[in-house]
Length: 399
Image (cartoon, rainbow, N blue to C red; front, side):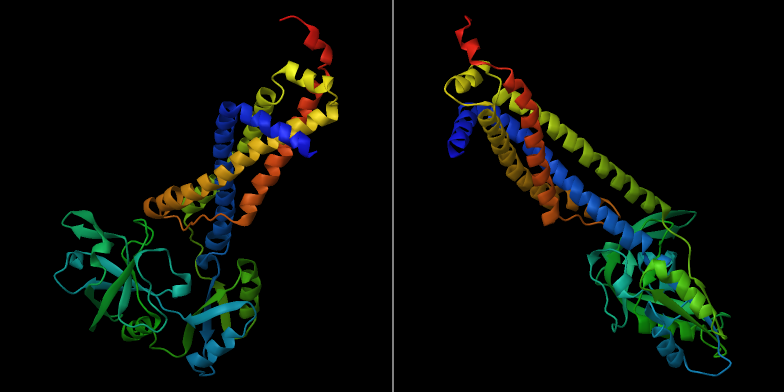
């Protein structure tokens, strides 16, 4: 067996130019296959996390008729013990505010809002705030500023590290309050979806909602519950609504259909890429084997003349296919790692708003290895039919 492998190595080395060309083509195919597999896995995970189980699909609005006069804390503790409930906090409606200084922002209207750092959108510059932080803010990357009869877009990154002062009113507009916060980061957004929404810490938002009159009544209380999985939302709503003084419903049904469509399109394209590349590698290896291993009928006839049978020649052909495939495989893995780190992920992170990060796992490397060995075996098996029809007698023929 080792003698047959040595023959295969010498044959590959003898045809070094063809070996290099085919190995390079295979390596680029393997690199593309690994990237397509990694992209498909990452997209499916992202769809599950950011769409199927996105925050908006798991938020429940809970209204409580507080005829018993219980405290908010008592209801919060009760709701946290509901099965599948991941988090619960007092309902905090968004509060309109304006900038109270001479900055370029003072022509716009802003929405003060809260979201737990655990569920925060993609931070593209700066950092997030913590659960216990105060007077800090995350602002959008694209801020719409009213400028006379028209508008302009301000880049939020120019405000990182600066303190902005906002003014908001109570429900009837009779009182005004100020809120100063330091911008610690910006999140990616599209105008029309989350334009001019400023996220602030939980305790700050509680205070603002109290000042603006959102919690004046203790008879009717409202909470937001977050279910750990989207598939448990309906059961949780049914359970909460069965309690006498409570009603529950899905907080919002809105979703970014453009983002959903983009994810699904990329997922479909990456799936097609996987199948197309596998077919391409199959055809490429067949062409490679027939051009390197069995292109010279006299060489095959000579092997048979000195005592090698069809099975021995199959082992030689298969060994040559494996050698070329493995050279292409290892180079292809290096190409895919390089392309992912320095090209693909930076493009996704800088030039898109997709919450997507692609990574290569061991499975993504093993699948192409198993595939290419299987394809090499099948190609060698197909070539075996041609080898069987070559006889030593052709050595006696004149050229």
